[in-house]
Length: 193
Length: 193
DNA sequence: ATTATTTCGTAACAAATGTTATTGTATCGC
DNA sequence: GCGATACAATAACATTTGTTACGAAATAAT
Image 1 (cartoon, rainbow over the protein chains, first blue to last red):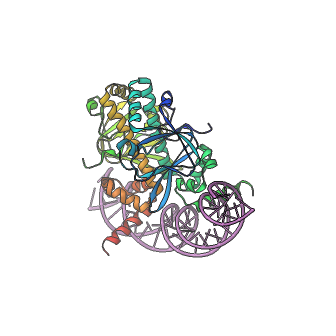
Image 2 (cartoon, rainbow over the protein chains, first blue to last red):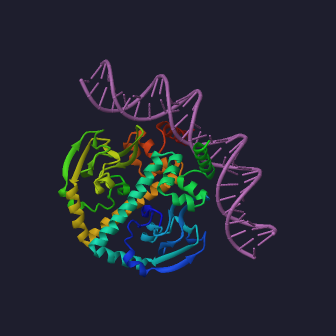
Image 3 (cartoon, helix red, strand yellow):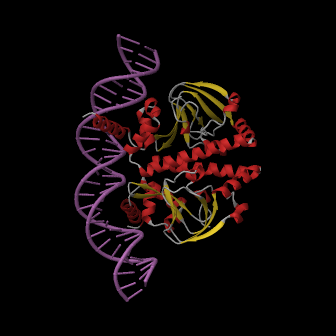
């Protein structure tokens, strides 16, 4: 799989691998929500094939704040954990094959994992990694220009640029689709004029 | 103390309280670094009194990306955990009384905590909370304007605006000090014209 | 008290970015 | 095939934000 596992979920080094057969299976067409804004999440997902995005609604505007690919775990994690309505939605971008667990199943799995020191360490490391990932993203927003953020994305996770529609990427970078288009145009012109 | 514990560190509901007496003590004057950029962190801190900030250096510019107050734990957490040079610095804003642990002491404490189910749960919840905090911050940058971010800060963590010099807050919000000044001026004029 | 240092506000101009509209192309469902 | 929909590039104009410069107020050091 040609992408960095650090991207999302509690992914990291796939702490759930030993438990993969507990997951249910589901096929979902492209552009379809598995969780809508305001719903209380009941399931956490695992992407077997395809890609997805998590979004927020801000005054009618749809803002993408995370992408998920093969191997990533997917959930509106805070709402899922606390049993509260999700502030955002989760939907497919490409047609997907998903695995999923219901909340009680997930809790049972985490409890079991926590009893085994080596697995527990892996789970906690994965949690740390997820935190580091968000810290890095946060800092990148304070420190970098939109151009730099786009170049970082191209370098660190090119598969996103290849597989995801551009306007989702624009909102992920915090800019308008028009501006992203400008940036791409400028980069292309700088390469071969 | 009049501030939300969610702010930083692995703070949350103070998982370390039972172990407070293991920490060393240190007094540090204002505007003094306890960790410089490029250093490998050897200690993690706890703010007993005062406040601090974590910063990055981007092409000569000093960018603040996190504040710490009484009760918060403070570390360049990824570098500390992985034994690598810190990408940023940590320094006091006000004169501080700090508590701290060396890395081996910290690892020992975490290991002990992990063996007690109730403490382990608290620690993991704290880790989740820290992740949620960064997620929320990240989303706020994609979704909100600088004005909205400043208003959120005023509402959610007013103690920051009260105790921290304005140019640190500006860089924390991702804008120039001049622009923050404009925003404040506009808000003041809107209140009583 | 007096002098540095730090902090904050304001103005004027430059650069970056958003908005709206238009066009062309690809893609999907039937 | 054909119409509908989604996607991307571009232009023109408006708005936001950064930069530089200057001065005033507050704070710290001597």
